[in-house]
Image (cartoon, rainbow, N blue to C red):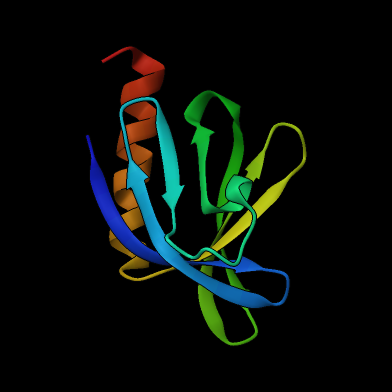
Length: 99
């Protein structure tokens, strides 16, 4: 699928700019910010490990919350949120069906 969305990761009370890439088997977050730990700069969220995806808010900003099966929650401010959620659902459905 490989669709890229400009996002900000809600992290430690602030926003960390980067991109979310919807791939065939996972969603990857990528940032070039050097002042954050490497495990936050680039990480993957495999579709098979995602428990839920919901619309949410951080203060007054519309965000997307992704809860993983281990209980960890990631919150992103996604530009074009509706378009992102539609494409994420399509990617997750395609992964689940094996296409």
